[in-house]
Image (cartoon, rainbow, N blue to C red; front, side, top):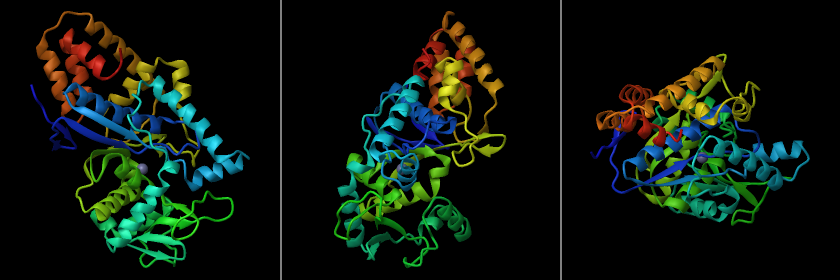
Length: 366
Ligand SMILES: [Zn+2]
């Protein structure tokens, strides 16, 4: 039976092929549960579509040109490239343990500096960017409004994510740098506007366009990337290419909290994937991340990880029972309906046999 994937209630009709861009890591620290949730969910979206006969081409970038990374390497007295590569190695190890398939494309920002310059030039040609003192600023006055935010909300988020809306150099507080000059100790490349480096949103816009062209089917990432990062990535790509929408659907995965607070490096309330994998089977950790609505923010509670392990055993037992194809159809239907894993699990455990085996396969729990 041919089915159409629904995400957030919206159908995403696909013919043959899907382009999935996952906003990847800035390799400056270890992987915590919040990162893992994002990448496991993006992996599941790809697996569900593949099971439905769609050829999914996935791309997950590495933001290895970033001020936070430069500062983290500097604080440790390490070379940025060497430090970033080691963090990537640790990340890849965690992803492999969580059974996240390796994306077809893994662009690194430092290899796409020329493409960022092409993007800046295209935006200038379209009248959507301007040069000032070695910067190229994207005109972003309408971006917050399109994201459904008030000016105050957008201002707060822009400041939180380092867009420096107070910078007096730009025409409008919501203009953001596509290109900016580098100071002492910062990575720099030659450009028509002087030695400098790309802006964060421009890096992802350029990498997406370089890999996939003007548009993609699904843009995935943590919920905190919705604004400003993904809003600007989309706005830049649309302004440069004249193709809308840049992303036909979005998969913004709910944040993981501990004691009600977002899990973040800055607050230190991290649960590391490697710690959980040291004490629990990887399939149990993966099921723990997936057995919930993907959009919803949630609190990490260790007892629920143990419960996920028990549920996994129940699912394995169900797979050993005889069972017909009706349950398998219900499992497939649940997954295509907003990646509803809890409903698929209930159907698989209830139906047993084919239904449970299908779910184990698509969820990569075998
Ligand atoms: Zn990104």
